Length: 163
Image (cartoon, rainbow, N blue to C red; front, side, top):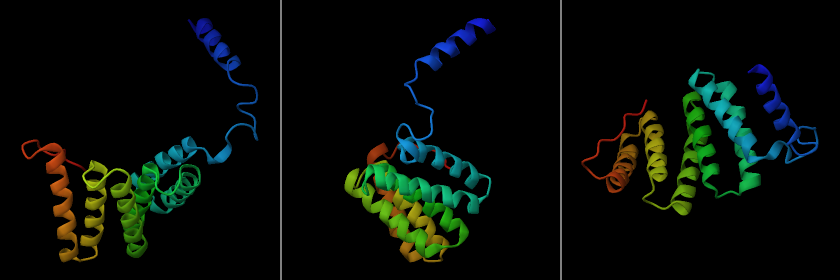
């Protein structure tokens, strides 16, 4: 069994394009897959409470996506959201709010005002605004997010519990 597995691995290796693993070949360090991996690692660090470790990874992922995918791509909105959440945890409310609003604007423009990701942006912005003590500002954001969810899912379907 080990020999057959090694044979499959060797065949797989020889089927790679010439130079695919060589430095300087291929798409390089600004590929969307690298941005995705950076986001994944940052998310892991964030969940471990390592916000200082997560922040530069989210920033690097965002920079790659903005350059490669454009400023209005949904992945850019996701990265803006991720970075904003970490900045909120770190207490940088001004930048976090600006990034949440930018992510919301992209999602409203690209995905539409009634898309679930737009509702998530509204909810995340509301959480931040509430954490700053602005309950009056947070309420309409929560209500708008709820209205989108009810429109998308219907009123009788329970929403999943989020951590």
